[in-house]
Length: 309
Image (tube, rainbow, N blue to C red; front, side, top):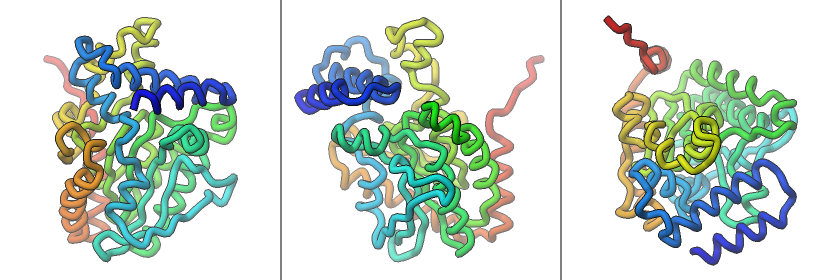
């Protein structure tokens, strides 16, 4: 694995320079150090989860679609600007029943990483996601979203095309949809880039996934002016599935194979299938009015403030 990571780092260093490329090179170097075991004595449990969530052989969205769904028909474009390969979606069947699936997609090798923009979505990706979700609502089809992104793309073009507005609009509109929505955080849940497709009735989080307002490296850079405190930042960010279940931000922790989802992708999908089936069956029993009522109630309970005596 170390040789593959070294090759990808060299290929990216030869690619066109951009903020996304520089960040990916830094991430790959972190993975390379982990593969060599250079940091084993320094890591805390939260940082271990970050490394597992970013493992290069961990199942990505299209892997889960292949293993969990049948008859997947990908749909493209936002009907306003273009298609965004960093976010995929389309109609499929889960155990014979129609669903709409939407999710971030990273790349395995250098060519795929550049094509998928490292899983960082542009505004047209979020608008495509909303278009597909509205289509699902029109035909009363449940929605499954698969979250795995370092964050929304911070490029100049993305900002010019309304990145913040696209995310905010998704949050408002998805909350209104009158069909079951299940969110699966299976890798990195990075900031608003994840949140833009993570409004739902049930939020499932895989055991070694992470979900946070900022990456540990960026948090360390802001607070300590360097990346040297990323392990401590991961701990204080409370980004693990266990932390978030305690805060009632996720509903269920989905177990993974021993060592992480990358050790046995098929088993990881099988474990997710059981939890996904139970959540869909539960939500299908509710009327559209009750779905929306419970969803709004759930959102209002997030991040409560407690007044000190």
